[in-house]
Every structure is written in C-alpha cells, then in structure tokens.
Length: 326
Image (tube, rainbow, N blue to C red; front, side, top):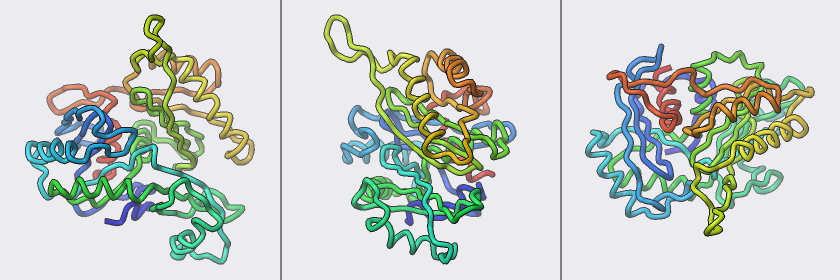
C-alpha cells in the first residue's frame, strides 16, 4: 500500500470503482460503518468494539498482540475477511503544511521535488516521514503545494496489524479530511469560508483549518483538567472546562490570522465535533468571543436504517466512508 497516495483525489472527493470498506482504530474503540443512502445519510451498519486500556495510546499502537486479538474478533464477527480497507492516520502523527516550490517544477514532478527537499530545506518532526503533496491552486501569486506527512513506522504498524487479520489496507486518510467531507455534505461550503474544525475526543483536541476546501493546518493537543481538591490528581476527562477549550480555539484562530492567512483573512466558521456534554455552551462562548459562526459538525444526528441515532464518535469513520459513495 502507498500511504497517502492519490491525495488530490481525496481533496476533490472523487469516488472509486473498487469497493473500499472504512474502519477507524481509535484509542478507545474500533469503529466501522456502511452507508446505505447519502441524501440524507442513513447507515446500513454502525458497529464499535471497545479496546482494552492502553492498547492504542495517543495514536501509537502500544500493545500489538491485544490489538490483533480484538481486531481478529471484529473481522470475523463483522464479516470483513479479505476486505479492502481504508483507515485513518493518527492525528498526533500528521503534519499539514503549505509550502512554496519553484515555478519550473511541473505538477507530475512535485512528489519527486519534495522527496529531495524534505530533510534538506523542509524539516518535519519525523525522521521517517511518508507524505503526499498536491498543488494549492487557490494561490495565484506563487506556486504552493499542500504537504501532508506522517511517520512511516507508525503507519507501517497499522498496516501490519490490519494485514495480520486478513484485511487489505489500501487507503490511509486523515481525520480532518474525513470530518470536512462530512461537514461539506451537511453545509455545502462554497470555499470562501475560513473554517476552524475542532474535534474533541476525551481530553484530546485536534484542530484543523480549511480554506478553498484545502486543509492548511493541523494541531493535536491534550487539554488540562482541574485537579481534585482531595487527592490532587486530575479529575475525569469529562471535567474539561469550557473556557479551557474556548481559549485554545481563540489562540489558534489568532495564530491563523497573524501567521498563516493571506490578505488579512480571519476564521469565519467554527465546526465542532465530539460528544462533549457542554457543546452548546462552548459554541455560544465561541460566538461571543470570536464573533464567528459556530456550528455542530452535523445539523441533526445521523441514524441507522432502524432509526437508531449514532453518536459523534462515528463521524470520523462516516466521513471516511463518504469518500466511497460520493
């Protein structure tokens, strides 16, 4: 498998002839969906199986033996043996950058050009990066490309465990693209918007920024929680304070305005994904402090054919599966 292959296809949301199934391996659970209809989105299947603690930790496989055992049960029980599978690179090991390149470099030469530049003029926080690149045509002033990279050893570990249970890992995507795909389905953005997409899972907050339908930035962080008055230990992750979240979002919106944006652009929309109990309060605080549109990723809960509503935990894998039905 060529990790991050055909990035341009993912950005333009083209479909594929071969049936690709979609699976996510998160720190807490394995999740799988099949989409029955697209307008509105209705799921034929939505399944999840919890992982034992510390099987996957902050995106890195910590206990491969346990993961193989649980995933083997999933493949058998969900009838996935020998299926071609799409999965997500872990957020903590994804880098997105907008990088300039000489006008003498043709589009078909981009991958080779950046292969040479990475490590010499372009530095990434991985010694073993695997990457894909696509021209950033929204900039008509200079030649720029969107570079998306991950850590090859981490990606190979995911490939290995999928192959060990008789799955065929053929596509590696990233969660910002999957979530944006779902958001675009919901809101039909025109591209002029400057969108800050916030994805909260437990204490892990991943923020990405989109403009002209291109991902421009990603940052993943662990949020602080208050300490117990009695034990001095961190409280349950559900106790993340709304203001803690909002202040991080405000910092990133300001970082975009003053460091990344062109033509004095500012964030115009915030999209929120997660099962956080105080979601509405966070959205209202963002509206008040940043004076921007703040919306949930989906307008109404997505349902299965039997009418069961699914949680936001499934949105990442739904966005991944949407690529195959668009």
